[in-house]
Image 1 (cartoon, rainbow, N blue to C red):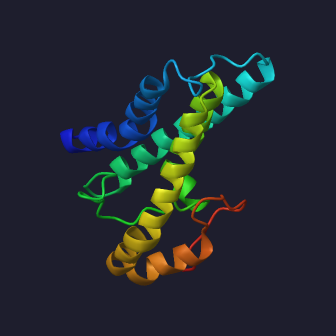
Image 2: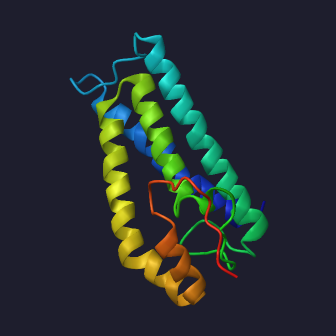
Length: 169
């Protein structure tokens, strides 16, 4: 993995799932919004761990696909990958990396009982949805043309499709 790829990982997912939540925990410490600690229910802990595991698998798998199939570049918008990738989780959902980030944030919120982290996930998801709609998707359409437009029509942005996408020959 290149230095640029590691930098993008530290900056982007790192901010969303580590630095942002840590700042929220620090800002809300000692207030009525402070994290309440582990849930008392084993079921809630198992649910949170399951969501977190699925989230991390999506993040790691998609970063690996960008590294192996992306043809250079990173996950960062300032240094985009060169090849269109529609393999693995991308066959089910257009933004599996960020879906993974959302699941990790939900898991964090559940595991430590933090409403501010859960709210951060919704704000983060909304901001990304606007960004994708206004900037990233038009840019991908310009770069990859019909290939991307066909993919975009067939694969949902956030809710995974059950059957994997298979482009028409």
